[in-house]
Length: 146
Ligand code: CMX
Ligand code: CO
Image (cartoon, rainbow, N blue to C red; front, side, top):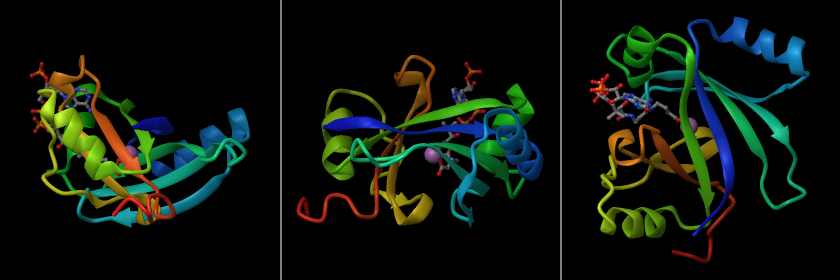
């Protein structure tokens, strides 16, 4: 079951400049920054809402670390902009199996590591109405779901 929007991923050419835009324009602050070599991104998570409703929602600003990465390819084709949307779940493997069983291509055969030690899988944008979609299980979620 998908229970919330975890984050919206935004492709940007210059991470520091994007962080500064979101700080200056909206007052959002960086909650976390990391490099994920597997995904080929340097990223910043900006918290939009807190944990009152059981899970925070973030903007994920993404700058590519290498030219053959998904975000570099996206920037070359489309320029900066919204790259993907991510739904939160307490059971990412179960959610991916259910959605894959309904005919949507699941791009990761097993969950990979995402921001802040979350577990993530991607769904093909061509099977999701043109929206690259990510499923996220936060590090502190789903301990009792196996
Ligand atoms: N949103 C919507 N459509 C997209 C897209 C995106 N982000 N990226 C690619 N597409 C579309 C392209 O526009 C293209 O469509 P057309 O053929 O109609 O022009 C088609 O998909 C193929 O595009 P491509 O540039 O050839 O890209 P690839 O097929 O090589 O890769 C994808 C696309 C989705 C399989 C790849 O980007 C992927 O595996 N993404 C998942 C991993 C990822 O994005 N990691 C970075 C984020 C990490 C994180 O969130 O933590
Ligand atoms: Co993401």
